[in-house]
Image (cartoon, rainbow, N blue to C red):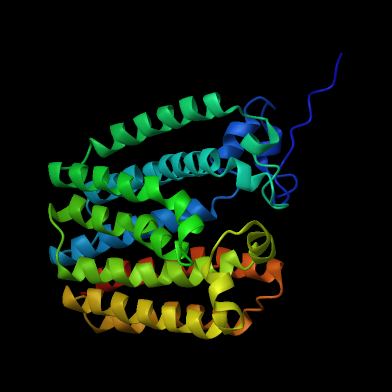
Amino acid sequence: MSAEPQVLKPADAIAGDWVDRVPPRLQPYLRLMRLDRPIGTWLLYWPCVFGLLLGATAADRPFSRWHDVWLAVLFGVGAVVMRGAGCTYNDIVDRDIDARVARTRGRPIPSGAVGVREAWLFLAALCLVGLLILLQLNGFSIALGAASLVLVAGYPFMKRITWWPQAWLGLTFNWGALLGFAAQTGTVDLADAMLYAGLFFWTLGYDTIYAHQDKEDDALIGVKSTALLLGERSATWILGFYAVAFTLILAAGFSEHAGWPFGFLMLAAGAHLLWQVRRLDIADPDRCLTLFRANRDAGALIAASFLLAGWFS
């Protein structure tokens, strides 16, 4: 019997992860969706959760109804699917750039494990699933969700034209804060806009940390990023981004009368963000990746602050 074919993996793939145990023909598609690296799904999902929780607070009730749980599940599945769709689209657009970067040349499309035509068909299937999920929401949320496609479509090109692609990612990745709130209330208010703005600055911080992994390759091939723009001043800027994020998220909660328990509980999230800056070493790619991934926990602390404050109130 012939051995199973070997599947080329990205340089930063985790050895021995669960994707290695599925049939080889499926592995490239799972890696195309980044299912082997769930941090991006978490960072897409947390803003949705924050929006859902803030929406419950705006309605002056705790986040505890069956409908709340159902929405959280829908958004969770949606985050997995749409993050996969976004990664697939980005990899189609960036395939030539990815082939020139050591960390990404083993991704499914530049490595040849998935053809461009197959990738487009896979993207269409993922978008169809995302549409079916979106149609479970109210009419305003459906329109709001559809509007996010403009941001998604533009994101892969931002690194070619601006030093601030992380800002575009912040606009794109945190759209769930608006969508989650709209799913609860049928509208978007000033507090939700402040939450969205705060999360925008959160993303500016953590994605600048992430971008320091690729800065040498980016500089060689002419790709722009805040890591290259800010350079040795990155830690100071990231501290500023996180400070603005913390302040705006606090303001969003207080605007919806989350009360003093929310402010007290948010101190843990603020401490976590400060810990990231203190631990940052932009010359150490492994530490940058670790700190970037730690934002899953920062998101969990923010979510816990909204959730527990709603119960206490």
